[in-house]
Image (cartoon, rainbow, N blue to C red; front, side, top):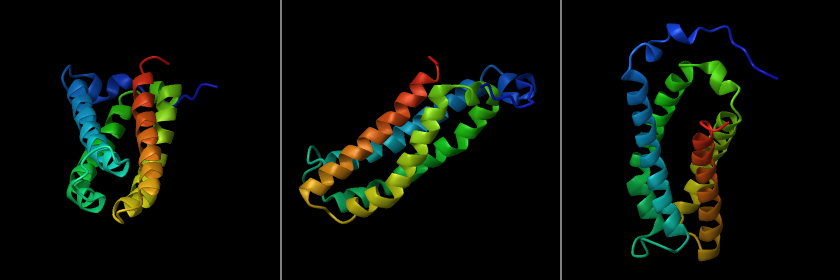
Amino acid sequence: MQIQIPYDPATNPLNNNEWSFPLLEVIHIVGFAIAIGTIFMVDLRLLGVGMKRQLSSQLAKDLGPWTLGGLAAVLMSGPLIFSSDPNLYLNNAGFRFKIGALLIAILYQYTLHRKVALSDPSPAVGVLVGSVSVALWVSVVAGGLFIAFT
């Protein structure tokens, strides 16, 4: 079933300037790189693979503002990108998967993941929580990549 919103993409300023949409995409991707990169650094610590000299709690505190800033850039640029052609995105399975995975990943990040990372967990708990986090964020990125192919 196709979803159709009465909307003319030609009226959106992002579609009428050759630089606005690509610039917004760059902001979106850089925001994701910062957010997911900092989350992945904490996950590596939880998994016991990297940053072994630093406690996960300290790493999570130090990187928290960077993670939040990256997510803020993503959450501001994403809806603007979506506004360029909402019908295209709403009817794209990759986009729908990405948004679902993103919601779950953000909820997980700011509930269980954050609580565990700030508590310096046992190795088993750290591996479990870090593995789920990596899987969720890889799903978000994969969904974003598949927008172009579905």
